Image 1: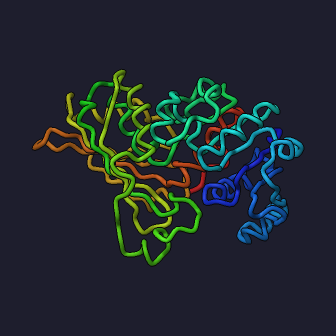
Image 2 (image 1 turned 90 degrees about the horizontal axis):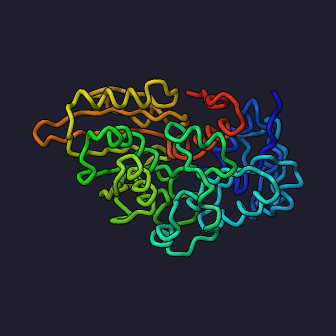
Amino acid sequence: MKRVKIAIIGASGYTGLELLRLLLTHPHAELVCVTSRQNAGRSIAELFPRFSGATAAELTFITPDAESVAATGAEVAFLALPHGVAAGYASSLLEKGLRVIDLSADFRLEDPEVYKEFYDADHPAPELLKEAVYALPEVHREAIQQARLIASPGCYPTSVSLPLIPLLKEKLIDPATIVTCSMSGVSGAGRKADLSLIFCECNESLRAYGIPKHRHLSEIEQELSKAAEEKVYLSFTPHLVPVHNGIHTTSSARLIGEPEAVQAALEQAYGEEYFVRLLGKGGCPDTKNVTRTNFIDIGWNYDPRTCRVLLLSAEDNLGKGAGSQAVQSFNLICGFSETAGLQNF
């Protein structure tokens, strides 16, 4: 089978590093371009010695310029860039015939006014919003397969939305009563110098942040509103925990249907999905079982005292919440097996 030529734009951050780990060994991908302004001229092996010996380990970082990227012959570009920056590269690369998988927030929201509300800036490329596909593969698989612009979901939205969507579609919970609490590893804040993120500030501590209106809340509410067929607002409290990677999410809502219907709805939605592992009633997912994989583990329970259903999920914020989910979408748009390059445990 022909190998697809790949570029990673912004390949030196934590998400870029995860993309490198997956794509350097992907059976159907040929890495031909990696970019980083800060590390231009250095090889992958020099910057990340762990990859020494890989086929493309001597590939040299270049500055992120659309002309230079296209000149490498790349057919698909992964954008591991900050929001507000990615859109410009996406526009230029699409014009040059590349397909784009964007891991920033620039194309996740359908309404540019919502983007402005949550990201404090006008959308940099509103003309592309209608074309972009929000790439939760287990929910929007057919649309992803036809897309040339992929908006890969955020880490929190993946962990929150996948457990809730089936119950909202089946009208099993009251949307107005959803409350969500998530805990994420420190890598979710990105690879940057920030006093609040250094080891001595994070170790042996846990804190909430981004309240009451974390940016990811915008895409969570967008996708849950589609599932519920009505506008959904929810309380969402993210926390930083002293681990490198992993997200654990607990959501609760008032149950409208019978408790037995919860498992049936989850089975109907995800029973055949390779990357969604259903733990059943009483199952409590553990981040150590999903880190460095593309799996999301989902368990649930019911509290008869409060008539609330509890939904629990665990994923890797750099994996199913970022890099590996983007590779899952890459497999879909290229017609490869969905699990290609991702069957790691």
